[in-house]
Length: 136
Image 1 (cartoon, one colour):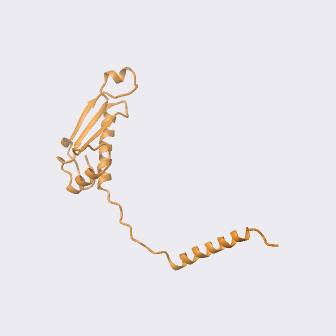
Image 2 (cartoon, rainbow, N blue to C red):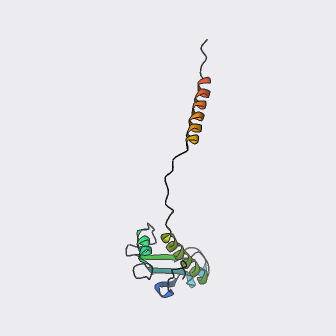
Image 3 (tube, helix red, strand yellow):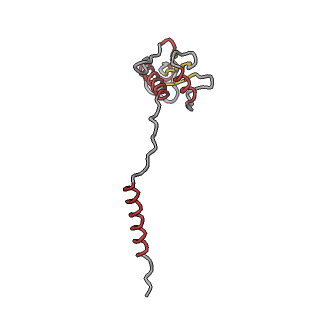
């Protein structure tokens, strides 16, 4: 499974098991194992160490205390679509862990913008004083 241009996960590291889906669905739900139970061990994987660390630090209920990602896919009626859905959700989770946000650079407002802001505040204050009671 391809995560990015440099990172791929071998299919042998991902455990996929077909299980029966929960909920309403009639006779099909009781007979056919269409849901997919995916397990991915972060510690035993071939991911780079920084990805492993970021995945462990994520506050996601799908990641157990042992560092195992558990995804249950039962959105679709077919096993193939649920398998694709589970793999896509795993891929999305790993991509999110690898994403580092752009660092913010502190900036100051320009003198013109500060002047404009203060002038608008004084004008608003004058308008409010004009609304007050008039002394005879």
